[in-house]
Length: 102
Image 1 (cartoon, rainbow, N blue to C red):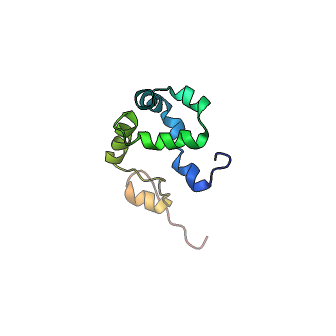
Image 2 (cartoon, helix red, strand yellow):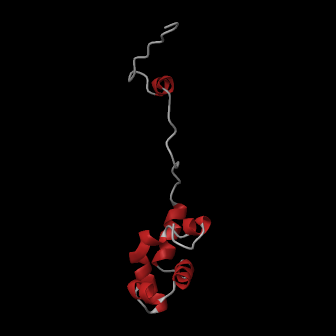
């Protein structure tokens, strides 16, 4: 989390560090400055406001956002299976012996 930024807000901005090349291209096109120059010269509040806005201008960031929206969503976490459930889903892979009263 970034200092001075609430948890919800920092979650909204987590995409930024992963797309600096895309942001650099769009910042040069729409704001006439490089990503590096923007990071050095702008306040963080202004910088992140511009990052959010660039997604609607039809540049690289907008194209990436469209790709992510169109891509099929994967489950966030695999659901753990018990040995019995795994054996039922993959017959022949497990030899399951039931032990009672041990």
